[in-house]
Amino acid sequence: MKQIHGIFAVTVTHFQENGEIDYAACAKHINWLIESGVHGLLPLGATGEFSALTLEERKAFAEFAMKEVAGRIPVIIGAVSTNVDVTLEVAKHAASIGADGVMILPPPGLHPSQDEIYAFYKHISENVTLPVMIYNNPGSSGVNILPETLDKIADLPHMGFLKESTGDIMRLTRAVDELADRLVIFCGCESLAYESFVMGAKAWVCVLANVAPAQSARLYDLIVNQGKLEEARALYRQILPLLRLTEETGELWQIVKYILKQRGFGTGTLRLPPPAHFRRREGPARRTARQGRLRLNPPNGEPSPDR
Image (cartoon, rainbow, N blue to C red; front, top):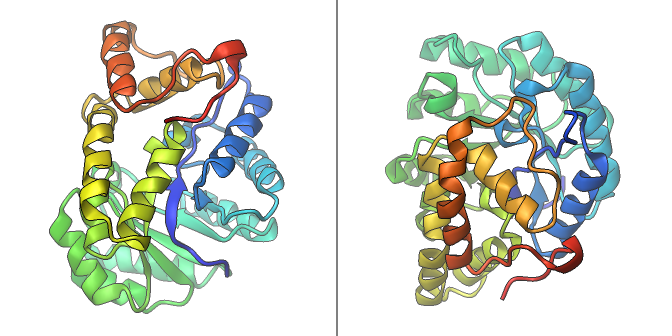
C-alpha cells in the first residue's frame, strides 16, 4: 500500500451544461491538483455528487480517475450507498482497477444501532480486499459511531483509515490516541484542519483543495513537516472564511464549482440545478476567494498558481 498522508482532495465531478460528465474538465482539474502538491485524491464522495450518478457512471469515472492519476498519488474511491450490495460492487470494482482504498459510510438514512454499525462493517470486511476508510459523519449518515464501536471496527480485517467528521476536536484527538496504531486518522471537517494536524491527524479529506490545492498542501507541510505553527496559523486564518463558507451555507457544491469556473475549470454545472438564491452568494464567494488569495478569471481560461 502507498504511504497515506497529507491532503486528499475530495474532488468535484465536472459536468457539461447538458448534464453529461465533462471528462476533459475533470482531467484538467486532476492534473492541476497533482501539480499543485496534493498527496491523494478521493473521487466520488459527496463533493463529487456520487448520488447524482448511476452505478455505471460511478464505475466509469473511477476507471477514468485511476487512468488519469496513473499511479502518481494514492486514490481512495467513494463507495457510499444506502444499498450494501451497491457499496460492495463499487468496492470490488475499485479493487479491480487498482485503487488504494474505498470510503464507506454507514448506510445513510437508516439510523442503525451501534451493534448494527459494527455488523455492517464486519460484513464489508468479509467481502472486500482493499483498505476501507471508516467514515464517521453523523450529518450524512444520521448516526454517530461511538468510540467503543470504532475500537471494535478497527480490529476487523481490511480496515485502514478513519475519516472523522463529527466536527468535535475531542473525538478526533481520542481517535488519534486510541486508534492511530491501527488506522490512519483523517480530518474530515474543513474548519478543524489546523487543530487536527496539530493533534496528530495524518491526513485531511479536503474540499478546499479543489480550489486551493497549493495552500492546502502548504498548511500540511508547515504544521507536520516543519513545525512552523505560527506561520501555519496565519495561512489558516487567511483561508478560514472560505472553509466556513463551504461548510455553513449548505451550498458547498455551488460555491466550489462557481469558484472553479472562475479559475478556469468546468462550467459550474450541477446535475440538479443550483437554487436560484445562490446568486446572492456570488459576492461572498468571490470576496472570500480573494481574501484567500485565489486568482479568479485567469487569462485565456488557464489556471495560474496562487501567490
